[in-house]
Length: 162
Ligand code: THU
Image (cartoon, rainbow, N blue to C red; front, side, top):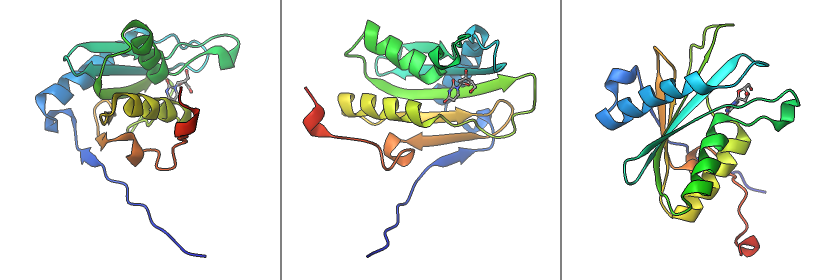
């Protein structure tokens, strides 16, 4: 038996003004994406903005359904839309934010495990790390470079690849 440790690295910024110009703009786009959230059941809006290598920015938001499990998180809505429309697109960075009228969100909202798994697959496919910004409106931003820092025990099995 042996013990092992994993180190996870990320940056924390006090507010949106502390970010570089491109990241600042991407967070504002994620906020804009909240407008199209369809979340009548949870009343919890999630928005994401994805910057591609060619500097295009695409938006996504959570889309819920009365059959609850049929809904989908903002991150996967945006990622799968990119995969479907432009399979060779290379993702540089994504910003994620959330908003609800039901309580105050004091800290950045992080992505669920299923979304992280999908981010990991995109990263592997494009052979380039993805940066993720978790943006709390009016507050902190967590910046993570590479999905391995978010999901160190990601499921991978090269022999399942086509
Ligand atoms: N949600 C996201 O859009 N992204 C996540 O990573 C976690 C949760 C959505 C799903 C649902 O519409 C609402 O937030 C409440 O769980």
